[in-house]
Length: 294
Image 1 (tube, helix red, strand yellow):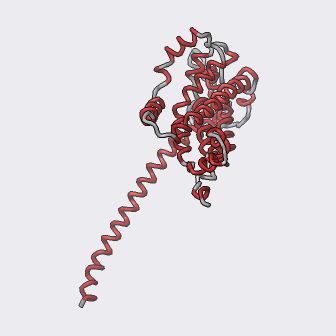
Image 2 (cartoon, rainbow, N blue to C red; image 1 turned 180 degrees about the horizontal axis):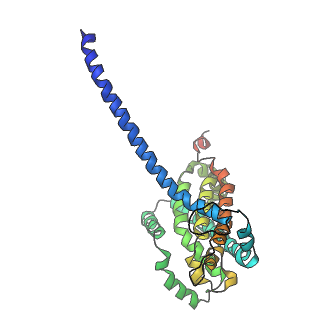
Image 3 (tube, rainbow, N blue to C red; image 1 turned 120 degrees about the horizontal axis):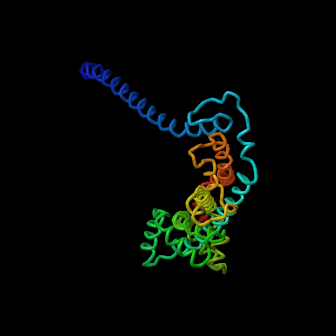
């Protein structure tokens, strides 16, 4: 009897199941189409850069070069256009990133290890600072730099770039440092190590992936910063690559698109190399569970 009654239910559910499967496939197709369109929006500009860099007659449209050549690269690879601005950018951003890394580590350590009544308000202030636009503070900063003679100096620009990267660096570093078990430091303290020694020889080696992440994000943010060096540096021979890129735009609205694309590829190389160099360490994840056993 039960078998006889179940047959009509199964037969009725089959078309409904096929309808649901068809609807699910249609939804997946729509989602994939939307994702494909979004992906194309990111790929097309990159494709334009690649094709325009080897096209002597490059324009705004994405087109396959009729006679691919490296003339655009030859035109921009000289001391004034590329080499000096790249050196300036590496000097400014590299120095500022190292300063930010050291300062954010020292600032994140007490925030991660000591529970005080001011920790939460301080962390909220840091979080607020990460969203504060630099343009809002550039006028008073420029006035301060004029007063203390730091305008058009590399050290002043490095210090300000490092300062602007600190809130984001501290916030990231603190979260990574929270993942290191305190019991490891307690063992080091029992053996007579100081807090700084425990930080140097126990905590930092274990949170190397976090240090790499902070270094990458800090350097990338500074490497693409146009406004700060444009305001604080006045001498053309001190300008980094992020500012020199505007030299491809003439005052009459004419743009050397092919040379601009070639310069953009060269300009992106340090960031790509830094990512490839540090990404090997990121694959180790942050698994410290076995470190406290025994």
